[in-house]
Amino acid sequence: MTLKRSLLLSFAAITLFAAAAEAYIVPGAPRPDAPYPTPDVGPGFPGDFGPGGDFGPGYPGQDDFGNGGGYGRQERKVIYLNRRVNNETLQLRQLAGIGENYRGYEVESVEAQFRSSGYNTEVALLTDGRMNESVYSPQGAVLLRPQYRAVLGEDIRTLQLEIRGNAQLESVTVNLRERSYQPPTNPGRTIDVPLYVNRRLYGNDRLDLGMYLDMNRYRGYRIQAIEIEANAVYNVAMMDLLINGFNQGQTLQVDRYGRRQSVFPQNAVIGQTASSIVLYTRGDLDVRAVTLKLTRR
Image (tube, rainbow, N blue to C red; front, side, top):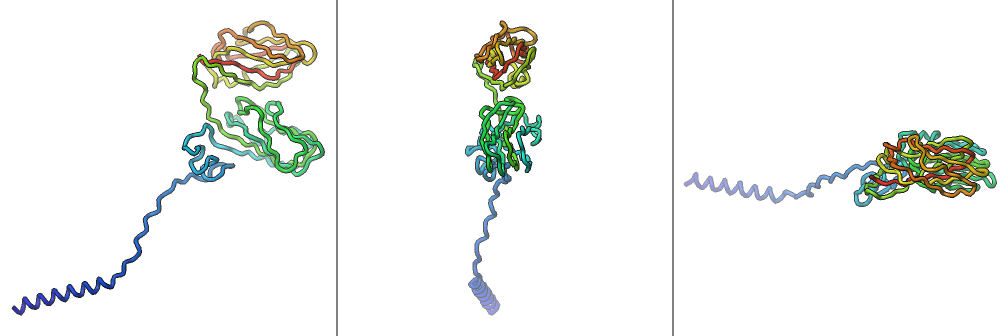
């Protein structure tokens, strides 16, 4: 009986001690959750408006819906000059190092930074010798944009800044954007492909139109017509269009008024039966533009 009573008293003492100890435990603050990882989209590309590029908080090259948007990365090529220019034409591609690896990039704009300029000084943006936008008496930052599509290696080959007069030119920035192109696939649909030629030809001369056309892009397209805008410098000049060495149609007569004339080739498929497109001329004339009308076979 004594042993049983001792055991009961011991158990009661242990229970009382545990309850007293529990009364002095103060609950702490709950353990914070682990931070949720966020994707690192990087600083974007030069000229972007925040993480992810021009399209906001997504990933580079995406629009607000996560789509590609049809355009790729943006690049700024800066040319530091800090000198006085006087009646000069600057070759921007050479000065900025824009080589063949930039084929397919579109020239969005050219920004020139002037400290001062002379009275009536004109600065103009030229693509393949063709004047686009121009301003007079430039001061500070001047933004010039191409007036025509200006994709390097496809629409244009040369990019120039012409200064007529004198000015103190600090720098020139060429803004480029990579294009993603999907050629039209609708069979039978006619598309116009302009070739920005703008050349003066003298006497018995030749103009290789293939230099102004991306043959790989339009391989397999049939040439329905070729429209030529040209005018004679003096009285009358002549033109013959040859495809793969064969004359297409009659000799074209060009006067000083620059009417548009058309040639309709027979069975001319780019990259196959039309791998060479050459314009032969007699007399002095200016070729302003050439347009190919193509259909997908």
